[in-house]
Length: 277
Ligand SMILES: NC(=O)C1=CN([C@@H]2O[C@H](COP(=O)(O)OP(=O)(O)OC[C@H]3O[C@@H](n4cnc5c(N)ncnc54)[C@H](O)[C@@H]3O)[C@@H](O)[C@H]2O)C=CC1
Ligand SMILES: O=C(O)[C@@H]1CCC=N1
Image (cartoon, rainbow, N blue to C red; front, side, top):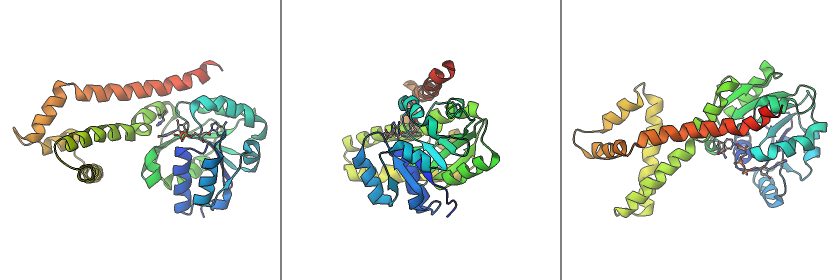
């Protein structure tokens, strides 16, 4: 095991489960050293206990008392209440990891009044299959060792890139939200495939492998994305017909603006907390 430290997940949703699964699968943490808790969904806690053999509890303050590492994995709207509830139980001995979009580390650092050691992170749902593109950044009081610990923990669910905190909103719009853009596109591809006579199973199999192939190709080449799609386009062929229509409808502009919008939303989520300081 990488660490014998007790890790408490405050928030037992999709992200928490993806990370817990990776940590256990890769034997980074003993399941008995993981505690998960949430607001009120005891059914979800029972499922996690059964599935991963971890500890679960409805007492959030107890869970925080036990922890050497606390992972904040609730929605941004719940962070204020969460902080209020655990404030008295947090001290500088505990490392706090946040996966929450938008929320600046400085807001969480002031949590204990004793300069909490915070590392802010942004994983994505591909953590579930060990393929997250996670970025992490150090807070003001976290140490080099803390960054290393978090890096090792998240290596269990994919790649880890260390960035300065001012880049975290961009990371969130691009990589945190990133999988959704692809799934959205795939939904449209499936619809067109079925309308054109493929069964849903045929469409899914073909599109899934196409996406896997694109990912592998990207990892394997130094060619630019433009070079790669131009490689697919034969003059006056099928791809050119499709790409021409996308260009006429400003498909790339829409995608570009969507990502900027997501980045702006990440900034907006955090601004409430920076302004109130
Ligand atoms: N879903 C995604 O693709 C990604 C999500 N994130 C971030 O992860 C966080 C969680 O997202 P999801 O797992 O999708 O949400 P979710 O809704 O699936 O889970 C949130 C969990 O937090 C719990 N919770 C709420 N308030 C709490 C409190 N005070 N104490 C303890 N638990 C509390 C809820 O009961 C629930 O179990 C969000 O802040 C999001 O920004 C980050 C990267 C990707
Ligand atoms: O949509 C969200 O706010 C979260 C953060 C990144 C992905 N999901």
